[in-house]
Image (cartoon, rainbow, N blue to C red; front, top):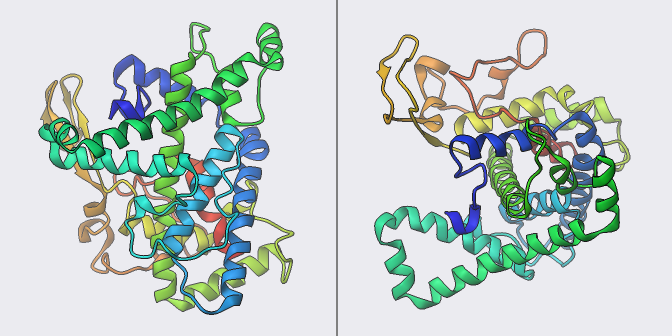
Length: 369
């Protein structure tokens, strides 16, 4: 995994993980949402909506929503992270990716997105082969060569932007004045400092930014794809979203009034649909942790250093003892209380969302669709 993720938060442990976690957690403020995340997400969403409108008007082809959602999330996360527009909605949708696996669904016309997809596919394959993946990539030379080339594309893309920013006069001037360099998340990461006052180096910036894009792109696109699958199977929920959007944004505003950081929680049914989707289809369906030191799990077993703990969020979402006998049914109403507010469940029962960014990006497209 190192050639793709580096020492980013996905693969780091101990002090390296803590450093990556601190760098990421400190920059996600309300100001960041308003000035960086919201504009980037809206720009990509405009492209998605325009493409859907033009495709619907032609009325002669089906639409692969999964493909479009992977384009939307990659486009928006690269925009907010690096300030670069991949223009993944700049060409007419042709539906050629129909039937492909989700990780292959972003537009392949751009080297970065194509390399991004292949590298992720290959990492997934390595987990399937486990011990023999190096031998496989060596024997099947085309796979090994393409993997190296894909990782090189990712590195070159990230490092070129990082180096350009570091060499800029604005960055050097702000660094001397100890002022923030914002405009995108890269600028904020470059200004981040740990408890000792040290900043992230060139390689750490590469690892942190690419890990952020990988984390946000796939999880959000998968959640959107499953949510729209259930919406198309339950048309009454589409009516609820439309009514909610009209009530909050106004009728026929033609996109002038938008979902914002201030109002997205008011979309109760939209949030409920997203949460119910993630109960049944968590983007991270299983997880594993290694015990660092002796401990006693409340109401559970004693664990020792080195023990491996595994759990399945997918299975927990289908556990009748947690969710009742209707746990296998898609019922967003289970998330709405008698006052019309979203119910809150503890992480022991539902731990799919701990980051506001993913929830906001996932909710954002629904009222516009």
